[in-house]
Image (cartoon, rainbow, N blue to C red; front, side, top):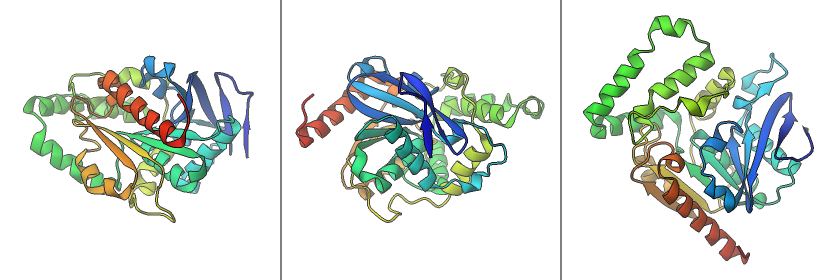
Length: 298
């Protein structure tokens, strides 16, 4: 059962003891941005908020829990889909576009598979269409074949700075964030870019995060499930994303019968940050096509 404060620009929705924060910014078609209500408002331009209502919401791996005994094994992909639906209902959003970055793109797609009647479209940004093992292997192949020697040197140096002595002083969540930042050369078009600011005040729940990346997506197949994903899907991907290589979409995107594919040539894992103008244009044109096809007006 979901309970919430009154709908404001920001608030908290509670489900099974988890406090899922939300933040509402902008005006226009409601777009439910799933993942983190702290990190993801930093990822999208202010100009985009002039055209869309962006509703940023936490999922359980980025939320505080009142029950320290809660077992991550209780969480399934259905759990995530049900949480997203509960948030949509609580906030009275009506039909929405669901936006997910990275692994949240897969969760947005799975929500659309389970609740198609409430989804106008899905946007997956820097996501992966396959299981963790296939994704990792493809990323290694692309890195070895195409990453520059400079990019490889920067990555090696930054990982070497995370010595056993440094790691011993950090919590598991801090190690996760520090490793994420250190892997910047595999995530950004500019291999020297520092993304630590994205993680300020963001604290992942590591048992749930490990369960999400490990158990839930260890055998994932975009074509799995009881129904095909019929919603229109915008796939936005960066050419320099070695963590979720664009080559995989070339193999798997046919599994989405109504998709639009946009490859950003000067981006890595975050095209909305690295090429904001082109990203905004691409997203808004796609949204306009949804509104036109449904007979709505802008």
